[in-house]
Image (cartoon, rainbow, N blue to C red; front, side, top):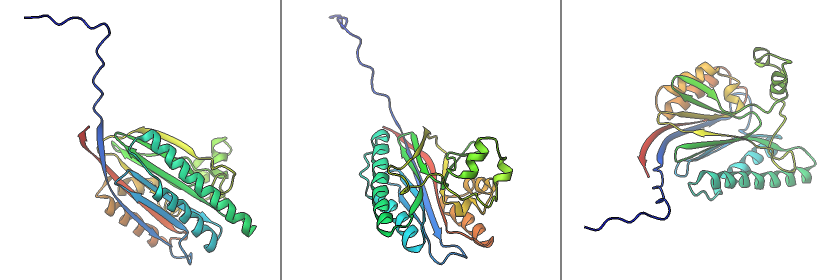
Length: 260
């Protein structure tokens, strides 16, 4: 019986098996009880793990168009399932929308823009991009975490210690943005990423939602029931409280499918 000869170099390790995370999702949007039109737009592409909410500003013929352009470009983005390359594709899609929005704003000689928040899920990782005050949340193990940080003048004052978080809630200047798509030559997107675990629940929303419901109420709705029930519950709360702004919410619940 022949003996195996030692290899001159260590044998390559087998590639790690990737945990595939699947997500069920639901989305709802409503103009609210005060606004005549809905300047929110959203994208839901669970087949490639992409969700987004955009909240336009600039009036009906500006804000509604701006958020729609962002949603259109994100819906067209060619995603591969590789988180790093897909992050590049998302950033490119938002940059394309940014250029189109700025061109229209120049032709109108009037400001147009939109917030955006996106969630990417790939394998067992997530990535979030955002500009403005549309938010992303995650519930895990009985804890609600806000994954984004508002780009507003009031939040900047909180960050600098000039105002408390309690004072910021309901402040009349709370919705004055410091970042938005279409405002600068290049979109100033913030970014966060992390691990996805089975049982994680994510929520994206415009400020029409988080301006009407508390973090505790978001937590309770997100941790109980399927995504459709989460969206219905939160939308009903907003509408019952007058819904002074457009409201958009997307919920996604994650489960481990297999290892690849």
